[in-house]
Amino acid sequence: KIDAKRIAHAGYGIENIFNQIHIDKYKNANIHLTIDASGSMGGERWKNSIKMAMALGKAVDMIEGLNIQVSMRETDHGDLPVISMIYDSRTNKLNHLKMLLEMYNCNSMTPEGLCLEAMLKKKMLVPSNAEMDSYLINICDGSPGAGKYGGQSAIIHTKNQVKRINNELGIKHVGFFFGKDDSAQPSWYGSDF
Figure 1 (tube, one colour):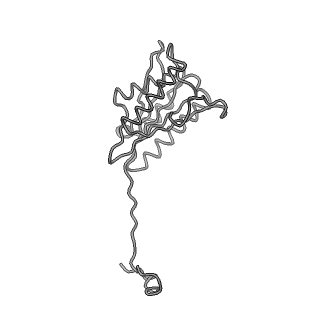
Figure 2 (cartoon, one colour):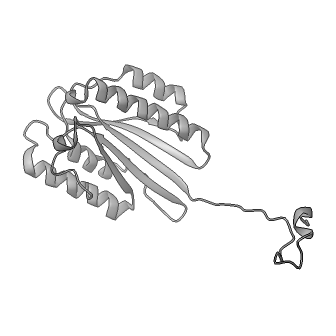
Figure 3 (tube, helix red, strand yellow):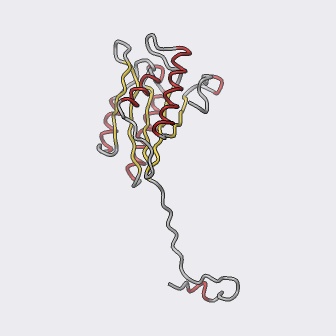
């Protein structure tokens, strides 16, 4: 269709006198938000994590081609690692997420690397492919540790699980550390974590 505004300029430097339609296409995307439900996440950190989870859930609910899963990382009463998948936008309604976030609390340890390893073994993560990009958003407030799992070996184990997620599944990883200030940020929290 001819653009009436451009036709008057034909021959004066504007050669394209037709209306143009621009279509931007993006690959589908999947987000897996995993939240540290350890006791040290209590208070403002927990409140902000819950707000972010709900905000992401609501945004994903309104965007076609975008999915989200929300999981909690914690330990049971015997300090055994537990990963709880509380929401999957592909199968659950948004009210399901709201209800569980209102009920959930944080009061355990931080078995970060063990839970990431379990997520890999149990195929809980959606891998990237030609039609979809996949992202893992990790919320935490400190070094991994639960029972005898802790220290430098737990940090190295957690880093290795993140690398596996990146390399084996093509999932891009973003980690958010909730701390008091930059000096409180643990030394292991870097570009490869």
